[in-house]
Image (cartoon, rainbow, N blue to C red; front, top):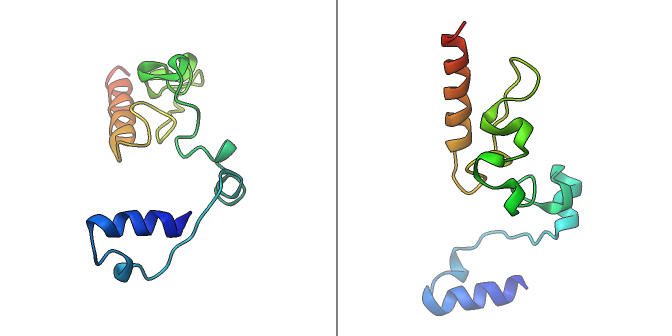
Length: 103
């Protein structure tokens, strides 16, 4: 599989293969075992209609707050998800600051 990907990339970037100094192919099982991500899901949960936007990771933990006061969530499992680096942490920090301002 890795060879096919490298060959395809090399069609568009001829020096691509020469720039690779190491590579590793991981299956979902490998990812789960090595990094603790259930089912090898890099987004820490399925991206399904019931877990989108403000419903991530679940309605009771949406908006970065948990049912336990003072416990917050951030990361790939929270909105907007793992594809937007840094945004979940930024948004969780805003929730913390907002809650602190109310005290």
